[in-house]
Length: 66
Image 1 (cartoon, rainbow, N blue to C red):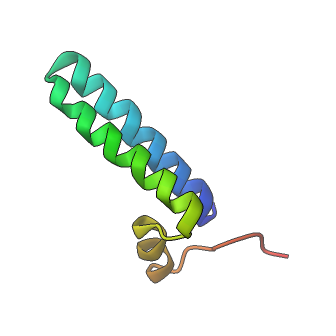
Image 2: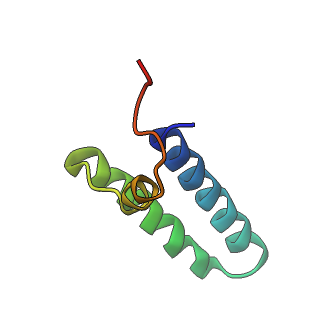
């Protein structure tokens, strides 16, 4: 699995988890959803993603292996 796919999977999981927590626990969890969405949005323009930096330090592949 590459860094891009892991970032998408983690972001999607965080969004679904925070939506479930907002539904069953407190609507304040929607702020976490907003944070994840804003981070994805800024990452599209700047290329900066904290999770990608962490994964690179752990030696995860960053692209295709050709």
